[in-house]
Image (tube, rainbow, N blue to C red; front, side, top):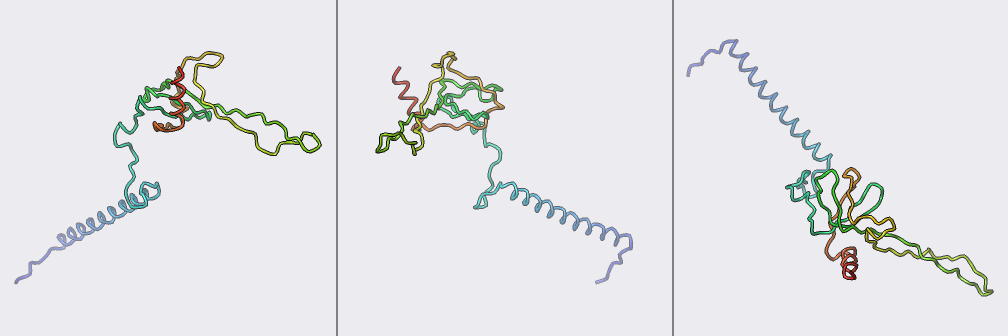
Length: 174
């Protein structure tokens, strides 16, 4: 076989093309490594190596069903229970509203052998009551328009939760 002579200009073009291929390969490798580091740092991988979905898979994930009671936790540390509507609105509405009230029971003083009162050593007894909104002295309507900016998070309550059972028991009375 006869060798075909290669001109100097062709050698330069071939060298330049092979250099570009190497450069592109290095860039792709660096980009893949950077993406891997970001995914790892952000905690988007589970322990078994599966990628966690950062965005909801559908709009259904963002909905809170109207027939289900929710617990709404606010930035002022208050928690309200009720049926949440208009979640996409700037002012979602919570209807059929309940909240918890903690009351400290009065504990009688302990009497010693001489009949003198001594300081109680036990912690005060606490009673937690479920209160229906609307029964307060100022007579509010049984719904709250919430400022979406002040909602920390929302939990859908199970039908067998103690709160939902207490709500059902309250509703059976009326």
